[in-house]
Length: 208
Image (cartoon, rainbow, N blue to C red; front, side, top):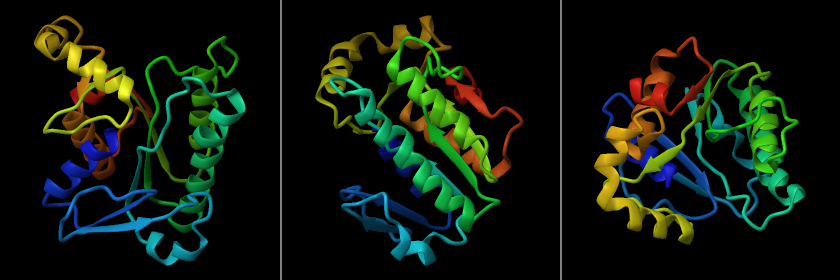
């Protein structure tokens, strides 16, 4: 859902020259400046390293829900896959901006009781040690706009149920609610200008 929103904003922004989208399935977008690489194995990018060179930024929006997953399963995708991609990009583009979509409540101490928060915290900490400019986006509730839908059935039900009260949520909880459009615009702004704050919550994303 986040990836769709970010991609939409990149394609609309006249200052974004081109976008390379890497994933297991097609984005569903058709645009002159969009190039897609569909891969079954995202752990091995060795054969497309030439395509990865020279990019200014990576918006890492890949992720899964921890629901019904063991810590080992969740860690493999959330930590190991993310770091595998990030280390490859850091080697090829040490000056690039890398933005990781994490989540509100992430545990930077890596020692709390919440499994997903610990793993996210470990991932953030490792990314911040790499040589590129790393930024951690920690949104709380993300509202999908412009027809974008989550691929997770539970989230689709939630958004369908809360749509009538979204204006109230924005007004009542401005520190915790953002949109797919605001996420995309904020990512582009950070990639363009950087920012001193490396870990950004929903309120920071909306201010950007």
